[in-house]
Image (spheres, rainbow, N blue to C red):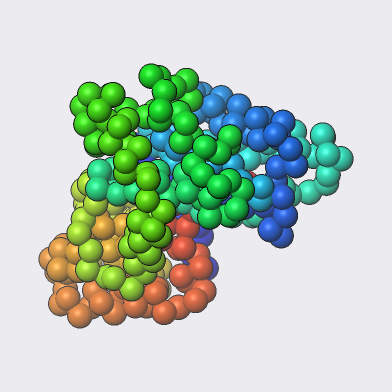
Length: 296
C-alpha cells in the first residue's frame, strides 16, 4: 500500500476545508467560532504562514492559506488538535470533532486566487447562514478595512489595483454577483476530467524538484525511477508523479514524456492507472490539487 504523501514547497497556497465528524456541528456558538479563529491566528503567526480568507460555518471551515517553510500538515495539526481539546472540555464531548481527513486544494496564486476568495465568502450565503456577504464569521469585511490584523488582504487586492482604495472598490464590484460565483465553483473546482491544463503559477515548482520530492516519499532515487525499472514500487511511484504533476498543473503530458523518455501514451496510461483505481486514487486524493492528509 502506498503511504500518504506529503509534498510541500514554500509559497504553496491551499484552500482548506475541515468538516465535522459525521457531518456534525463543530461550532455550537459564537464563542466556539471566536476560539477557532484565535487559534488560527496563533498558528498562522507561529508557523509564519499567510491567511487570505476564511469562513466558519456551523459544521465546517474554509481557510485559504499560503505556507512558508512549515508544511500545511503541521499548521492544521496545531489548529485542529488545539480546538478539539477546547471543544471537548467545554462541551463535555469525547472523541473526534473533525473528520479524520481535511481537504486541501492547491490554488493558483494569480488567475484564480480572487475567485477562491469569492467562493469562500459566498459559502455562508449559499448555506443560508446569511442573506448577504456581511457574515460575522467570514473574512469579507476584513477586505473593506484600511488594514487587517488577521487577514493578508494585500496580495488579493493587488490583483485588482495597486492603490488600496481603488482595489477595494473593484473588489466590492467583483463580489457583487452571486451567479458569477456559481460559475467559479463549476469552472475551478469541477475540472476533474480536464487532463491537459495550463500550468499554474502557484505550482511554480520545477518538475525535476517535484520528482525528487515524490521519489523521496517512496524512499527511491530519481535515477532509479528514470531507469524504467519495473518493480511494483517504482511503477506506482512513477504513476503517482504523472498523476499529481498533471493534476497540479506542474507539467503537461508531453513534458512528462520528455522527462521520462517515454512515449506520451505511457504517460496517459500512468495517469489513468491512478485515476481509474479507486484504492490508489483514494490514497493520493489528498494531493488531487494540493495536499490532503489524515488528521493526526
